[in-house]
Length: 358
Image 1: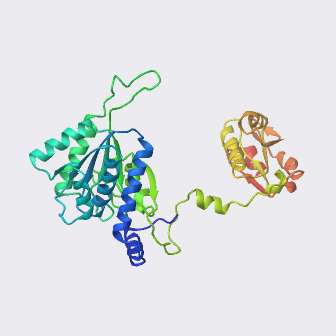
Image 2 (image 1 turned 180 degrees about the vertical axis):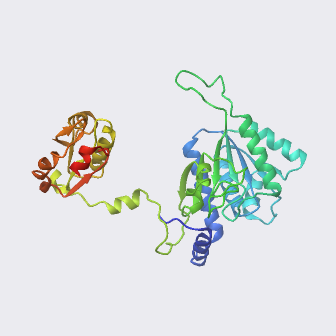
Image 3 (image 1 turned 120 degrees about the vertical axis):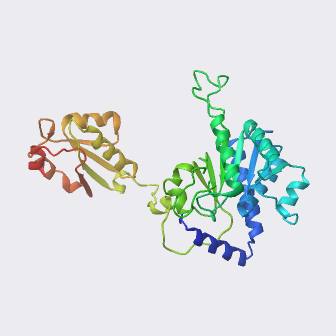
């Protein structure tokens, strides 16, 4: 999956719009998928949700999600950073359903916002999207400050939720970010001090570089990529490894295959002081799908494979004070022609007998 810059993402959206998948259609899809991500994680009918909606398209995505959740029976409160136009179809539809809402950062609006943040089980951050970057200012800064205070106030443990099987349960609401946590630079990963730490970020179309770059990556939580009907990006550029990409790289497995069909690896590794290095290396070789893995090393290390890497065969090498000795070369010579690959090094140490062996 390609990782894109903000400019690349803007270009892809323009191509999609020109091809018939309008900006309005993409907003509708984005909001619906955000709502679905919330329902998948909190399938509780009648749950309460605060939607923090900014003035731009990110706020529009949040309002579409609010509409879907309201129709599904959720208790939704929307707080607009600024008043939206009466001609805004997304906002008009939601208002027509009688949604409770507040606007701006006046005393009355902030009092209502604080009350809802104190009671809600979820908060949807739809204030700023990929077009924003730190520092955050204006109404959005005030609202993010209120969110931060509410999250801090509700971070203490609830005694009624703590039990031997559920230690340390907090009353903190779940935070879902639309596209990016507000204030995060989607190109660099830079964040504002008020950028919320999301539990889940539902990003649109493709992952943005800033979501995978620290310090921003620390604020993303679980990353969900929502498919909104974008065209394929141009070839080249950074790529995020995912299940689909890996599955294309792995060779197919014939039904009549056996372990000899899938290659062989000889792992020469470990010492009595560093047995884990050898076991991790052998286990990794087995997990890649190698058919025959042999762990070659000193006796105590090879013996541990019985419980740690049972699929590996064993080859005991001569030892000197707990490390592989120079005499081990003669043993390896009798075996290494049977293998397609040999790994030498992890955990062998830099002791003198190992130097002679090498």
